[in-house]
Length: 184
Ligand SMILES: Cc1cc2nc3c(=O)[nH]c(=O)nc-3n(C[C@H](O)[C@H](O)[C@H](O)COP(=O)(O)O)c2cc1C
Image 1 (cartoon, protein in one colour):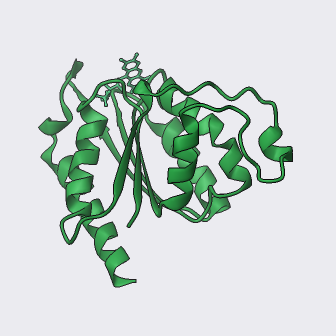
Image 2: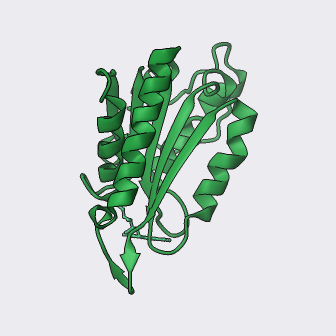
Image 3: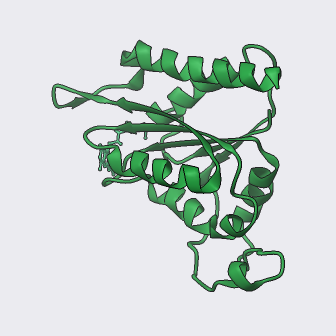
């Protein structure tokens, strides 16, 4: 299964990355999958300029030539898209939101009919981002799976590794998706 991982956190190997790590171990348990990682914090991706050329151009391509072009082609090619992000001020990080806005070009052609595995870590609230994915999934025919983990206890930040049940949930989701792909 071709997989694209969109890492939204600026913290490499932080909480959301750790959940994805366990997910990928599960995914690859029954055989290696092709996985491409995009660390959005390290990429040069301009915000969408709202020029609408993706709406009007014959092949619905984005006019901005930057690192997003790599994500476009990997996304279209992939079966499984992994979204990993902490909550920052009530939503996904700006890095990932910038990528999402630029996906307007894919919304015209190529965004749909994927499996999404979404990993969200947070202190207090996660509903806005969960709600967003739930709202768009039926519209785009997306098979949606979400794992959330609250990384705060007694008013203090704690690492996601303090919650083995969540790591297991991520692993099992990967294992199940990997197995279901092999069965088809
Ligand atoms: C700038 C900043 C803003 C944050 N805003 C929120 C927020 O609005 N809601 C929330 O629940 N957690 C918020 N958090 C906490 C992170 O989402 C949480 O610590 C997360 O587990 C970090 O994941 P990471 O290690 O993958 O970066 C914020 C953290 C930072 C650094």
